[in-house]
Length: 180
Image: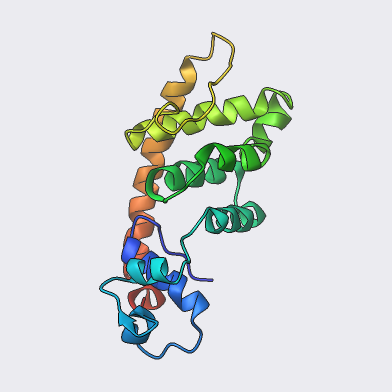
């Protein structure tokens, strides 16, 4: 399965169309909906109602749960909140909070695990100039002595950005990715 970063929007929407229009033989066919030629792949996705509602984000999250770690799921959640067109972000959180906090549940408790996960997501959202209030997400309830989580997240996120840069460079130079 090919993977395209949602931040690379045109390639992302192209992949979405390719996965659903199996008989496509050209980009023009992919961009044509009911005889109307769209200017972008995103516009074609919208006209085909592929982006309506949040079902696509539920499907994406369900697929990711099968192969990704809780940490990666939390980063995906923050990315979806930042770049996806989600109608109901609180519902997305509510549906997946157990999977997002699975590692913290093992480490702490069933009640506090999702709170720790949410605290980490909140730190990721800061890098996208977002916060829980803007997204209408719940308040985090953690012990007062947990100020250090912010510093740890800064280090982890900085390391991830470096890793993602190398991965992006790798993807740009692979044969499969160039043809998307």
